[in-house]
Length: 202
Image (cartoon, rainbow, N blue to C red):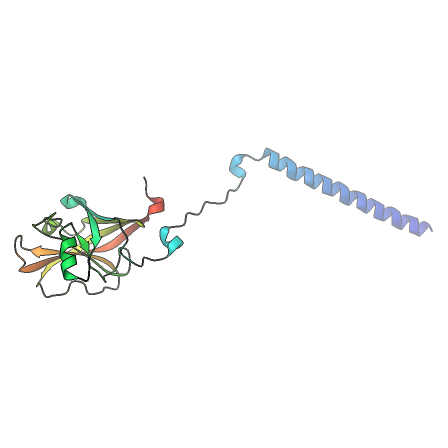
């Protein structure tokens, strides 16, 4: 009987200690929370999804699109061209055009934009002034693409400047020399930076 009493007393003591320990632990946690400064509280970072993450890669040349080349003072809208030759020349009268079936801005491949040298809006009148290291910007609903010029050269009219490339490349073409279509002036630039529209400063 005495043994049973001692056992019950021991159990009761353990329960009292456990209860007291639990109360002290809870009190300690509450005290720490109340004394914590705002800097100690971890906040989950806000994740900003880009246009591409939301809707996937482009399926067409997205507009409105603009080309800006600070070195030659160019800032014009770029329109999508056409497979119909007559329609293509009418669109070209309005400004530079994206050549159909070439890569879209930012994509792996050769994104080709052509423009007149001396007629209509003559967007590429000063294209021959571009040199290695000059920057070309393409802006569309996805964001801002920054390309850096790495080479320029002349080709014959029947040569093809639209051949695909393994890396994201921007190719600009126009007639050369001014007032003649004897050659085509080709400027190539590589993609060096992309800023999603969600991260652009308004």
